[in-house]
Image (cartoon, rainbow, N blue to C red; front, side, top):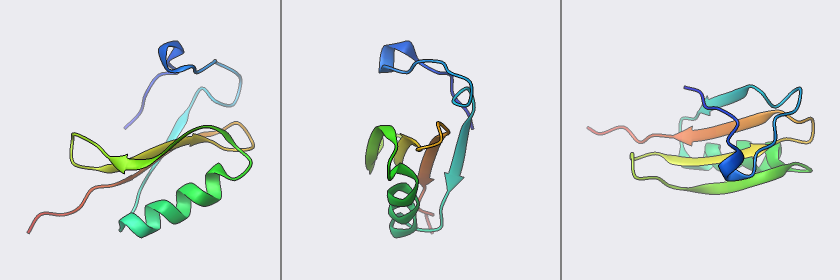
Length: 77
């Protein structure tokens, strides 16, 4: 999965943020743990929330300028 740097969302292209790393986690709690750690000292954060496509999803730019998407998609039995 990937995305562009979107000026409409307030993103500004800088060397280091032109790639987004996606973490797909095993649980919602794990997603929150990764988000909390990666967003500490960072910026451009969007806390985890339920999305229309069925995932729990958040995004942040970490303190080193790397953009992360953290996602958990529950399995359906």
